[in-house]
Image (cartoon, rainbow, N blue to C red; front, side, top):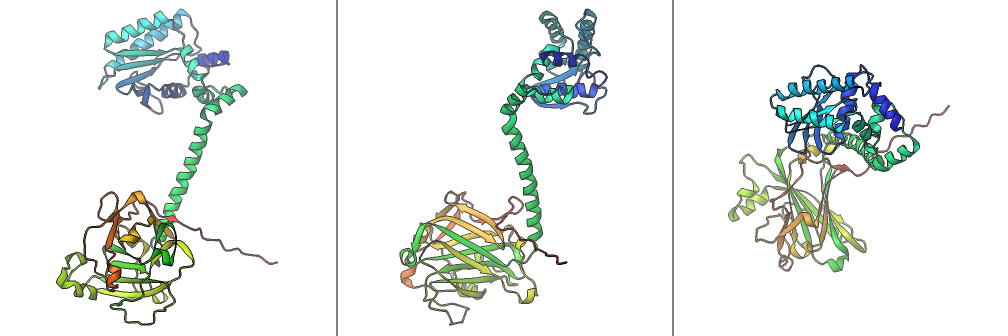
Length: 435
């Protein structure tokens, strides 16, 4: 195989200057001293002694020149031709702006050590900091190396022996498999994003917040809890600027605007939701002071109260926001409308100690998954205005806010930065043809 590589380098690429340059570029690229290796003219052509450009040892600008000879041998005449080509390319390259630091020269003529030293000295006298010469033997060593076997096959059409195949796949097998997997994975990610962007224009049916706890609890073990989520839209949509929803196990409370009294006492958990109505006055929650608390409550529109079941032990509690639209008529929020939403979670202090993970879903997509290291409990005093009332003994367990551990004030979902994951795939209709 050594003999075959040497013979092919002598004349296999005669008259094919493009493949000569591409092969030499590939040989430079597997030399770890070179980075950002690129052709000066990708399709070949006059280049002033600069066929290849690269960075040498991370700092020096390097130019590569290819000086192959047709049907090369190691005669004095061929050596003289190679030396003359080296000197011509060196003189042309040193005049470039910006000036290169290193000259790399490829030739399919074998040169002795003294002949190469003489040429390198000539290049340094012209102003190069250094120079390297890849003669035929040095290129052969690179091509017969496991890193160069694919280059040898591509340009010199020398098949790999069984031993070389084993060596090649031992060296590159994992990388090849990873590259294939990454390629398919990238295609899948692009298709998933296109799918999501299409479905993001569909009506927002529901938002579900699941608080995953540190262990399973019975309803008696967990005691009193209350948890609410505030979704502040980036801009008011259809008169709504904020959605507030949550769940609690408290049975005695004033439902504010919700005057219904048909709450089933068999429900162990109670869910509720409101929309904050953006009025023409331009008032928002941040502008309300203590004297305006009742006015702000009036701006909440109570939409739904629901019940939830707690069977035996569980380590998950869900708060759900749903939309109602008669036959899909009238304006409605879309899934894409929660892009850029600011989210804060409000819970009682004792319950906050049990939270392990917060899962956020919207329609059929998982929007976020917030682990313990991704959130913090803010225990600073604040007034939480909500149109329901809890017992005084329940409120002795203070309200706290759950915020991002990054010390941002709110969680935020940015669809331009992250694609939500669909948690189930639609089934295809099976059509049975009867003859």
